[in-house]
Length: 473
Image (cartoon, rainbow, N blue to C red):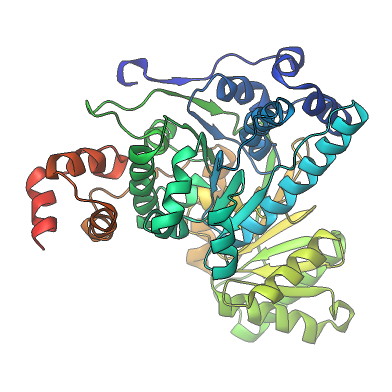
């Protein structure tokens, strides 16, 4: 740990301690709705309240999103109670999935309305706390409305944030951010979308009125120290910004089985193998209330859903495919049906492996190897969405090589031997885009711009010559 700046959270706060910092309406609402706090909430809520940067790593369904939002909502309610809630953006929530954004808006507006009701009973009249979404799906009319009357909580994607930083009128609205929440960090850190976001965040901090609190939310990932530095960024003296790692990723039990659908994987003809696969899938679907099936390609997801319906007419209307090439309407429709418990199974490629709230899943089936332990755990973690439920997963091997690979993978997943995440280093193509954006905003001193860029973790070791060559380019 560099100079103990990044620390592991050791103190678990009691319900009483956390309730003591919450305003009356929030406390009363929380007690009625949940009763007590989950592990990530016990470690994180107080620290965020104190203004600490926090990275929370915990399984799906353990209440980590609420851990991130609770302190911020509490502060907004307190301001509202005192009549000090202004028309400005206090909380910025960034997620890699547009679908997740609609989900969070729904999951925020419900609680906010309920807190308002509780406050009424207690004799307060709270102003409305507005939640807004800004993504590529947002109309220009909505965007211009946001400039005039910004939401208190803004939900966006990494790409839309970068564009917003270059929108002359709207970027002014981003200066007031006090809390930044980055969700699904594991899906961002290891690719250039993450590098892109890291630069946006440092540019945002450079123009912000004050230092905002950074909160990262991630599924099981390794090594957490690197991810924390990625979320918190670096100071001008090249040291990581201080913050806490809350690791409650093992609070949930996982049960993983590997199966071959035939006795002999080498000499069974393809037709018989395919027949055996669908017969086993049908059995598993019948044995469970809701099953989520992952294939490794979108076409595979379509094919499996189509064949299951064709071979087993009993599943007509009860099985759907879900992947990112489908239209937004179709995707939302499948998610809603799944949530209402109207489907027996959904076949997907990758679009449902992140934290969209899809209600209760009893079993996750992986057809073939997901190629990584982290990904296997992330997918299987979708089963048993509540914290105390066991996540049940079955991996079906379809050939000899696959069988060897998934057996090793399942063994590592059971023993929590995670793959190491590789964060890109100095991706200059990403830097070009941001330098262009920065130049659109104002005239920069070269050293000053270089300093801002190096606060972002992927660019912390960027040589000045490389920076200059990008500028000259």
